[in-house]
Image (cartoon, rainbow, N blue to C red; front, side, top):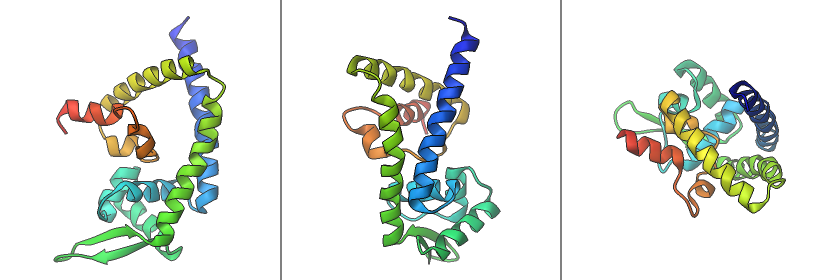
Length: 173
């Protein structure tokens, strides 16, 4: 099999899966793609994040992140909280936490449906191949937070080690 064909099949699959997952997730949350990613990132964070850090984790500039936070704040999904000195963090509100759960559930449905066409052995093979691909992609992207911005982290580490987290630990970050 030629590398070009495999790469093309991967590209078509990745785009179709992304379209399905993001469409369902953003519709469930009533937010933009970056807003959905921000809510998922904040859901996985044990403490609030600065606008700048949140922007880095979802792939936005500081000014674009500030506009996104303004939009999420207007929808009462996040709140800014002042900290020591001049620090300000962004935290999810109860509505934002509910939206985060709804986003992940909506994202999971088409992904589970796509994988359901494979039998158990094929799913295990695919999981191993995806782990290898994600480890390589981490080497390109260099940020587990950015790479996993829409991940359901709890399902990723259930009965397994997250390949992206392991790649980051192996790199010493």
